[in-house]
Image (cartoon, one colour):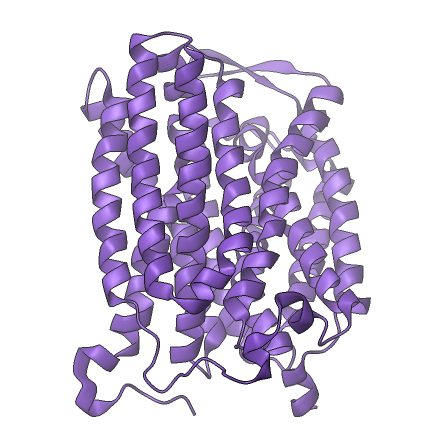
Length: 446
């Protein structure tokens, strides 16, 4: 059974105060990177560039999240206090810098300096804060919650997913209430708020007193050596199925609002977006907690891929996106697909560190997890772009009217995105079935 906090240690040895709460403070701050769609058009209009030009800031943020996690994983492994401080400073500095270059772009319309400055601050500097902030609490949580590792990591990663649902209405209210220049003022205010939250998380975060980093051969091994301790194809399978799950998730999520409008629910886009964010967060917590009860955590990925394939196939066969308007059954199927993919997308994230720990042990988990998050970096550059390319090259755009406005949608194009994602989901399921072997934990329990 899992050991509770030491009775005589008080808050200093309380797993909730030293692991769970700081993890939520860190992840609920950095998870707001997914609020980009709330203000991306505002930024574009304010600095005089197209929305497409500013969109690269978000893609760079996700790319550098994954790459900083990959390259800084060893720092997280050695010193979570240094890594969590780096996360707080970089994330807040990136937000403040983004606000400055938005302000500069407002006074110097179409300035390349403003656009590049936003790329550097929101993409690169914030990206470093995202990667180190994402990794820092994960191993600590698994050490404090030894028998419920999935529940613990799921709780923190759910905070990352729920951050959008929590922060989106607050950001929208700030944009509406701050008047002229509200967009850059919002960034400056949030930079201060998130630095305070993350710095508090940095101060509270602590590994258990009874944990001592391995001083044996394992500690001196390179990450490649640790990965090679099991068949190399095993790790490749984990990396690829993680990459595919993110790519498919981003492909559908990036088109989610337009799909909802296609099926006649334009007036409910905001509500459905919030519900899908709840499914995203719920999948992170629910799938990881469920995996705690399984001999092999890889089973949870098989479940995620089977559910995603089933709902994608149903919407493909019924042409639900094209024919959904006015048809209650098809609307339910399309919404079901959106919610299932969001839940599976979140569940894929929360189960990776625990799956890796079952296969490769806890000694180098932060570094291995960091390298695996490089899959997120590349998926961030391919998922949205794949869906956008398909929508722009297949089907035809048509106008629909909502609230007196004409909206351009491409129902056939969104349907074609599903043909790509179902093929990828099938490949991921095959990888999960045949390439990723049962973990050491599963073999011991067999």
